[in-house]
Structure formats: C-alpha cells, structure tokens
Length: 158
Image (cartoon, rainbow, N blue to C red; front, side, top):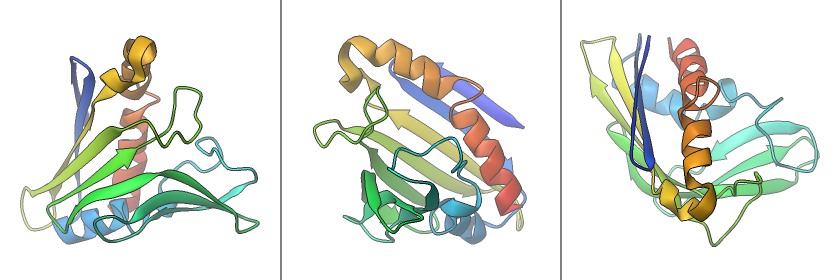
C-alpha cells in the first residue's frame, strides 16, 4: 500500500516493499529499467531501452534509447547505499531536460524487518517550477505520478 502526503511545494510518499534494504536500494537505482514505465515516461528521441543512474555522487541520471542515444534527466547528488540516494530532477514542465532547473528527489530505505523495507520518497524544491509549481506538485503527487511509480517499483523489488 502506498501512503501519500503532500505539503507545500514538495511531494512525500512512501511504500513498504517485501525486500531487504540492500535489494530495495539496488532495484530502485541499478534496476530502474525493471520498473520505470519506459513506454510512457520517456523524453528521448526514440524508443527507450534503459533508465540509468550512475552509482556515485556526481553520476548522471539519464535514459538510453534503443538507438544508443542518451537524454539527460539529472544527476546524483548523494549516493549512500543502502540508506539513501538523492537525485537532481531537471525535467521541465514540458518534459524536456533543462540544465537550469533544479528539483530534488530524496529516497530513504528503512528496514522494517529482515525482508521488509519502507521506501520514503520526497520530491522537493518544486517552487523552482515558478508559475507552474502547483501544477507540477499536483502531477507528481497524483495517482499517476510517484504513487504509480512506487507501486511498480515495489512489484519489481518484491
């Protein structure tokens, strides 16, 4: 079950997955291709083949198309496996990479037993969308936003 809470210009959601923290962290980051809806959540020039998070602070976050081309999404601000990852999301309200836009996604992984992990996601700094900030908060906080993505992630991790 996804728990959802939105306040201000951030979206906060969490879900409990049937996996140890190490696996949950690995599926969220290294295994993003296994749960990211590539058919509908792609901004590249061709069909999407992979969602890539380079496993280090300063690493890139991008999609790779089937033709090998790459389209930036952002970068890795903090890499602390299996506790947390912080990503910079640099997709505009028109769903294009904008190197001048900076919003952050922090994901924390907390053990709730040997084989259960609470995954808490916060997408913050949405005020950087300026006049579209509330609209983007509503999109990210909707059932089709991070809520849906976390359910897909939980299915892949469990």
